[in-house]
Length: 306
Figure 1 (cartoon, helix red, strand yellow):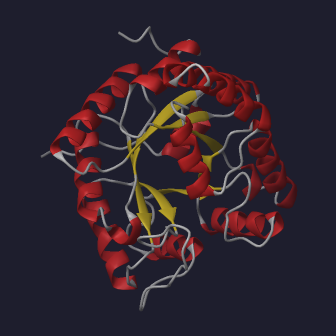
Figure 2 (cartoon, helix red, strand yellow; figure 1 turned 180 degrees about the vertical axis):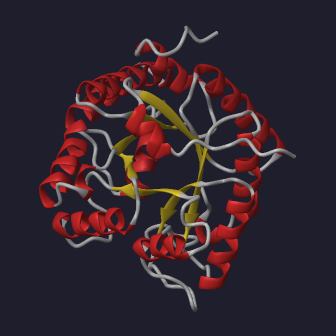
């Protein structure tokens, strides 16, 4: 099957004069979930998404599904970003995976350390003959025969990674990855734009060159209190007090009111990010289309949902 050429995401970010949007998908667990993913992917492709990313399960638990879904996304066609983590992978396995990605034309890569399997907040263990830091994975990519093929991104953490001892250390780790060869970063979900802005400020102040590389905000459209609480639990992000109060007031009127207020809050967050010069809005879709579509419509970037 002919490959669809992938546009380097760093090229999209440097050449676009308008704010873009992109979407994140998770490898589905069953046929019904996979059909939902393709419905969403087709919707976002038709709306002009700059790219779609595919997550990678802890310990490589979705390795084959990630690869298969990423390949099929390129056939829509949708520019595709594939995730890769270090957890439970040896050096040789990582080299093999990179070879598979390069051979399939999956050349947009998000390099991640990854969460421990089972408990994302548990102890992180380096695999035997594996790598410990994302910067080492970036160096590995840059040392392969396919170095020039891959366009690399990383994760960034507006409130600092939960394993970092301080914001200063978190800033240093992020800059180490950017200096090693990453061209941009996508942030973890946050609920206060100020955290995103302070992250950009810290990086630029610490290194005017590496710190000036594009930082893409990660947005999870708010559809329920449970989904927000779960994201806070997994990521260590904090809730903006005003946002929390608005959601709690909405909850008094039921789930539909929470969703309506959540979409309104997510739209306001996106509007502020656009005003502050974010180059792209990266939506964590959970493989659903409607909530993200509603936010895009509110921003004037999509027609009314039907």
